[in-house]
Amino acid sequence: MGQISWEWPMTDCGESHRDRVAMLRPIPYEMTRPADEPALLGREGKALSLNISSGGMLILMEHAPPVAQVLKVFVPTPVTVAETPTLAEVRWARRVPFGKGVGPYLVGLKFMF
Image 1 (cartoon, rainbow, N blue to C red):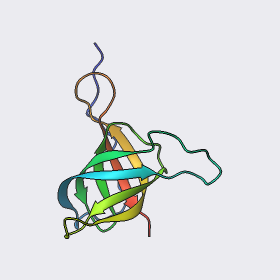
Image 2: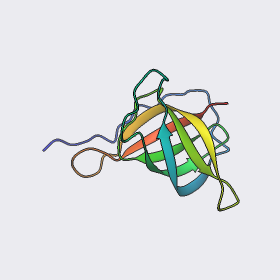
Image 3: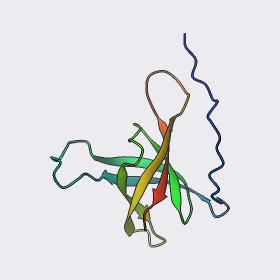
């Protein structure tokens, strides 16, 4: 039986993450596509947010979107009935090494301004 390694490469990207705060919430998302690409099924869903900062967020997803994929994420606001749509770029994805099969994946997003 093969084992999944917990050894993930660590790199110094020079970014500060001091402003991260925990945020455990279901986050609806939509994957964007180029205007000339036909619409595909399964391009929207829900992820679980783990933390958020002014620059991005960490989410848990069932699948790994490609790096550089742009997602429209619906970030909750302090007003519980409102969600703010925000564009975010997938910067990295790592499979959580639990169990068998595929997924879930930790996915790092960078907000696009």
